[in-house]
Image 1 (spheres, rainbow, N blue to C red):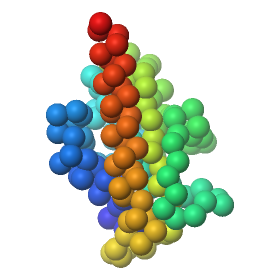
Image 2 (image 1 turned 60 degrees about the horizontal axis):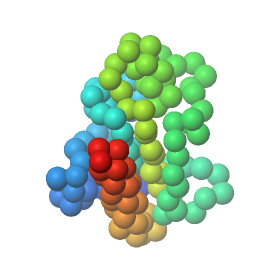
Image 3 (image 1 turned 30 degrees about the vertical axis):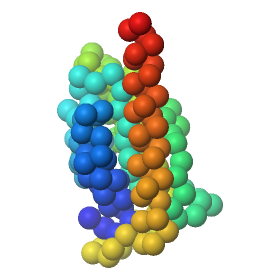
Image 4 (image 1 turned 180 degrees about the horizontal axis):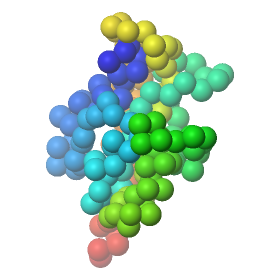
Length: 148
């Protein structure tokens, strides 16, 4: 992976160790339609990924939902994003999550090949883990309340 762009995979690997009984954690460097199979059969999902948004400082964490993302103007099977994947899943009537959260981490440079994760982005790792665990606990409580 490329420097800061690896933060999602790093966070997912750490979460896999910390929440083995709370969630299925999947790691992938794929994007768009290539991710679809990872979501089938789940009610909820959290995506952890690097983001590059104007005016944000590296290491800042933001929460997004799919509706916050712009569709790709000219998608193709080789170049799609999350909105196109979700649309295709619903059109195919797949058993797909109704609740998808995206934990985005602002990065320095998505094109730095072979470099380590920058200090500001690496320092956000524990906060990312905290945010995901908070969602998992919230969803667990919601399920328990629904079942009682």
